[in-house]
Image (tube, rainbow, N blue to C red; front, side, top):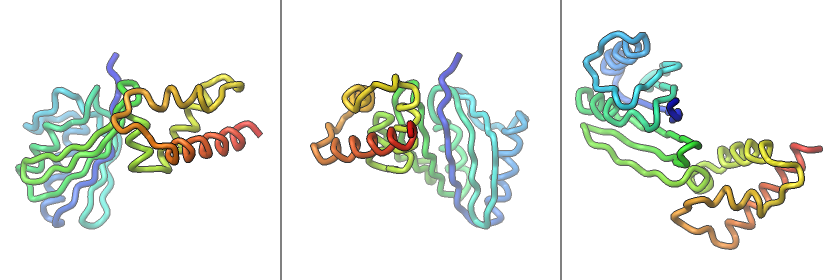
Length: 175
């Protein structure tokens, strides 16, 4: 069974171009042939939403983000694409920008990425982690899991922030 990589894609462009991209994505969602390279990974699109000059696409891909497909869309259409992705099982998260067939990727270990890039999501993931642990677990127990593979060892103030978030979450969850 594949690990699923969550993808949160935002595509920006003019309305006419986005109309074409939306048709292409809908065809992919319905598993019709689009001529796009989508394996690996296989991208299962759950939703496609449109708001003016933006398309938002959500859905998991197997193992890794659908870089080839998104890069190909950016090379065929005059659009800017941003994909924020995460895969807790393989311990990574990041975001990639695609423009004119080029991709610019930034990724880190799962918890490290959210701590430095999306503190609200870090808090949510921390609460999920706390719920899976024994009630008598301490911050030191959680810290071992949070820091697996970090490229940038957190300084004392970052660890203090994490511990405060842990204590607040644990109190809220087990009151």
